[in-house]
Amino acid sequence: MLEGRHGIRRQPDIAFRDFVKTYLSDHAELHKRDGGRRDREIIARLNQTFGALILHEITTHRIEQWKRGRLGGRWISKGQRGRPSPIKPATVNRELDVLKSIFSKAAEWGKLLESPARRVKRLRVENRRTRALSADEEQRLVAACRGKFRTLVALALLTGARRGELLTLRWEHVSDQELVFLETKSGRSRRLPMTPRIAALLATLPRVHPWVFTNPRTAGPYTTVGKSFARALKRAGITTGDVSFHTLRHTALSRMIAAGHSDHTVMAISGHSTTRMLERYVHPTQDLKVSALETAAFEIEAATNWPHADPEAAKLNRELEELFRKSGGRREARTRDLRVANAALSQLS
Image 1 (cartoon, rainbow, N blue to C red):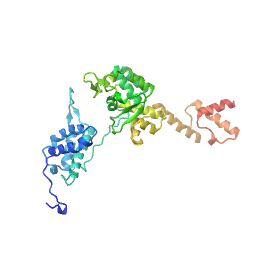
Image 2: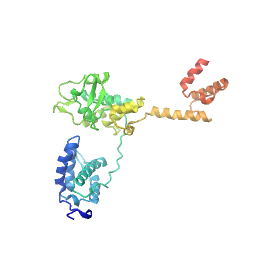
Image 3: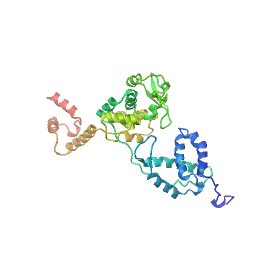
Image 4: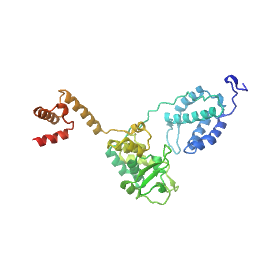
């Protein structure tokens, strides 16, 4: 066992809370974008369950029990009043990801034979927001905002930038030609060209502090805008309960895609690395859906004697049939665009 033969090695008796200190200093603080701040918060919660246990005593089943217990728990945020909120699967998954990383490093650094969390699966999360504001909701929301918060909301709707990217934007990264987001989710900087509308919005803000959106009480950047956004939604009469600040990003990117801009152009603006990641931002409007259905119906009508729902469209289709019959043209060769066909009929008549 001491020589490590036959796959048997003596594992060091190191407590979980002792190893995570090494994990934070030698991995998280060096390689995580936030310097390990988020990991440190999660580890404080993990220590409540695993802190006193020896690493090699923590089994896969023990982690599954923790996952189940954590999912059934509740939490109270700072300053929250009323009943505690249930812990969501996404929260458990984030904590599980950190736990997996800890055990992976323990195995890599020779503290464990293998990670007990390797076969633990993440919880299924069905929280992909597919909500995009309608044009009317968008106008009401912007009108309901006050002061610099209105500028923040309008800028989010113009650029499709994330909340954190806007709140950490500094004046030194804003020029007459572009604005640069450095604090991005991917860790890669993103440059957007300056437009007259964006310039007009930024011109309403004072350039006194380093940050574009500065909290006057702390002289630093705002860290959250949840309460202000909730009040604006209430004033705007948007009470569906499925709108968050991130909905503004969905709305902006959906507008760009619906306007016909290429995926790669929108990806350059949004910061997505693949078109697959962009798919969740495609929100066809009701008018576009109706247009698509009518296009399909027109093809059916062209091949069969399917009854026409629109009398004017039916009349136009009969006129097209008669025109092509008299001119000797093939039905398949006629235009699919009714507006072009109507113009052609007007010239012939």
